[in-house]
Amino acid sequence: MRKMIGKFLLFILFLSAFSVPFAQTDAKSDKVYHVKVDAAVEKGLYAYLKRSFNEAEEVGAKAILLEIDTLGGHTEAAGQIGQLMQETDMDIIAYVNYRAISAGALIALYAEKNYMSPNGVMGASQVIDGSGNAADSKAHSMWVAEMKNAAKSQGREPLYAEAMAEPSIKLSEYRAGVGELLTLTADEAEEVGYSNGTVSSLEDVLKLNKLETAEIVATKVTFTEGLARFVTHPIVVPILLSIAGLGLVVELYSPGFGVPGMMALSALLLFFFGHLIAGLAGYETLILFIIGIVLVILEFFLAGGIAGFLGAVAIVVSIILAGGNPMFMAYSVLIAIAVAVSGMVIIMKFFGRKLHLLNKVVLMDSTDTESGYVSNVNRVELLGKKAVTITPLRPAGTIDMEGERIDVVSQGSYIDRGKRVIIVKVEGSRIVVREFEEKGDNE
Figure (cartoon, rainbow, N blue to C red):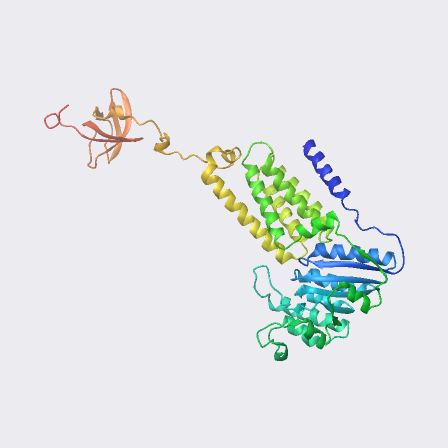
């Protein structure tokens, strides 16, 4: 246990060593912070943007230049980023360098000025749930309202933002009929006022805003921010939890604490560390998780199963609360449980007899005759032996064979007391006899 604690502390120190931002600059005037919004939009991106915006405000930068190229991501994260942009006093300029789709479109619309590359596109912002289908009406309605508010925040016509998220709105002049989401090209975005111009480079954006002489500060994602962005990705979360669940199952069936246990522990540490950095989870969720682990460990020493049950509930609740989106985390936990159960079935089927803990928990051996088990001694040596009934057989009764009392059953007919019988069948504890007649039977 001490070795495990030592490894955990070293792991935390290692991560902390990389948590210092890479982009450190002296406080000077005429600076423009260049921040990239690429890959998926998730809570890790929000943490990165918040830190970058704070740095820009501390040094008194003139503007923040967001370079956007994303297919979208978590709508909740996009909403938080939009609120962050609203609360920032500095000018925020967006440059859609190819794609601002879904959540990326919301971010672009919150920028005070928005420019697009010649092949840039913006729109297609319908909410998709964890199964890849359109979200329920409540989530959809909220997202449509957010898209409209993003457009209104900078004085843009909200109808086009609504059409990006609501397929029932018909805008045929922009190639979006009923049932299709609106996606604007660079020229179309400029025509409807969603773009301030079409430019081919960041330098052109700076010139149009008279910032060509400003010092460009390119922010860098720190190691911890990058890790947080990775582990909070919608695809990575269920994978991490599945690794943790499967690792714990394999570890329970293995002697000692080995590779599967370390994999499970590492996956859970990465999950909570990333969500803490991203601002999704608080320390209370981590404390609840630790309490759950302690209760599960206590189950090995306490009878009743209550501690283990409460521990499992605490672990699941802490994971769901740490994710920020309870519905998505519930789906992720269900996936992890399904993977763990499938792994358990496979282990029991193919490796059951070789397992360590499983043999103590589950009865692996069946007590059948093929395995050498019988209910009592099978006295086959009694076959053909003769005896005398000492009770009537109706059809069960007792016989006397050379002074030994034996419980038997007749072959079907009634046999009176004091009759001679012969043993004709032995099946474990069941001994079958029939009446013996001197003239009709051979010894």
